[in-house]
Length: 464
Image 1 (tube, rainbow, N blue to C red):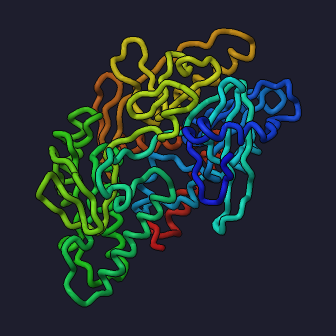
Image 2: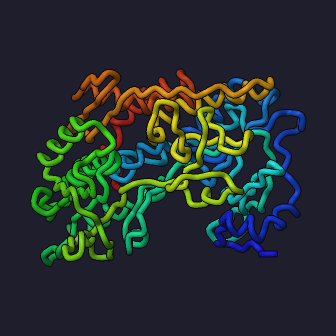
């Protein structure tokens, strides 16, 4: 039997193949004092998982349903905002949700930890131990029982095995990664401002690999933030001449998953800002000094961000026999039930859901997670009374892109095109809808007022 030690990362293959006996020796942690309650375990506290836990808690309360949210982080931040955290336009510490406090207010339980496997026959979830920064165990390994299991673990960046990408490029999957990039950006500007010699090739050059929504929006946010940084007494940095941003896309155009008119409008704006766009070429290597394009061309760069595609976390590939697609997403039916197990469901980015009338899985967007979380409340309600789970109906409300303060573009239902202030307001309303789902209308309104006041008292970007 394997001994769990600090720093060890358990993966399902090892757990299920060799160490299932380890977890079977651990007593199951009671989910509720009333063992007769239906137990819902939600793995992952992203947009879909947190909204689902909140809605179930509000609807049923702790006396009618046992709801437990498991996440390895202690706080939640809406993932579409991570590019703003990376640029410094947003502070993760201010705009995050603390799971412990939130769970107490909304009638569900939060358990910190990383799920490393499940036993479907016993209806159990295996949670790895947690350690502090000094390697001391905080929480031992646990086993949680469930009647309904919902996997909402989201997605991570997919580097497609590109040499050096994992080591030298920064992905924006978590608030910690976004904050780390922001610190690197600040350090790069301070270093360049203090040095007497001429800037080396690639210095103050940021390359963004992948021109989907994250990459495109990040390019605009970085342009705004780096110009703002340079204006704060960094007199030796000529922003227009020294700071460069390059956006690279393997496909023929930027924003490949969105309507072409959005891509054209966004490309024109970025080019006007001085962002260099290179399409139709692949990154073949990332090094400490920059990136290699194709076989011969090397582009020096001090900062490299990887946003060229996503996949579901690798541990889903062999999660006790559940079926996955080529990018690790759990295959679900039209009720969002995992294929082959009536007690397991998946939502949002980690679910591969092809509905009748669709040729491809639903897109990994915030509106998909929002709608699927709402649907699973109905599914749980049906399961409590022994009814069949209803089918999920998806409605595409369109697409929106916001390029910092420079411009916003949208394509709504029926092909309606919008831009400017209206598009910007609708883009921000997506976040407000998420806040309303997790906090309620009153707190969201009060927080919005507080945000407007705070804008007048704090710097426009994070400078530390």
